[in-house]
Image (cartoon, rainbow, N blue to C red):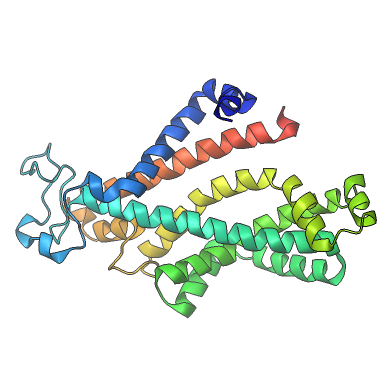
Length: 291
């Protein structure tokens, strides 16, 4: 199995695509941070017993006054900025991936139902999607967070609510083409139930575009969550993501304490950059029209 994957055309093209390799390496680095984050730093930035106000606002180690214990400096509570970035990356990545999976599951289900059964169900789902697309995603997320309050669970709900539409429309369009093909008609003649036809025959043939959408959407969700947290309506201060770290650093940015917001911002930029490079590669490889 492994040898077949390594010898596939996709892997061959990946090896000849430097941006794709760079994006994969960045994403793998982020994955290591997410999985083994606490093992990479010596401080838990949210354990008050490990913090000291005497260590507050220390600059990065290469600047005057830097402390070798804190490579990227500290914030106003004496938290190690590098440790905060590691823990914040785990929160941001978890939210981005989880929200993507939730939006994909809901959107794919609704798209399959709309495209397969058509009629009033199709019209209802698509009109709801059209209404939602008439509003900016950020505005919808802000409204939902203002209505339900802050919290990781609320952020996941808001991101799922703004993200399901693209899956539903894509799957619905692909399903409309699949249900007219002979293999689906043969399945009907064979007496298979609607559920079996949808799950066994239609769904596997509409998954390819979803891979590209899902990859890119993780980066989009990370940015939306960071924006919500920066505005103070995202994750709670007890479990800050990268967006909230940027917000905390922005409050003292013009006092010359730039490292509190710049380094978390660079981490978000690297994550989204790597994800987008991978998404671009997958889009080119999985889209037959670009061959």
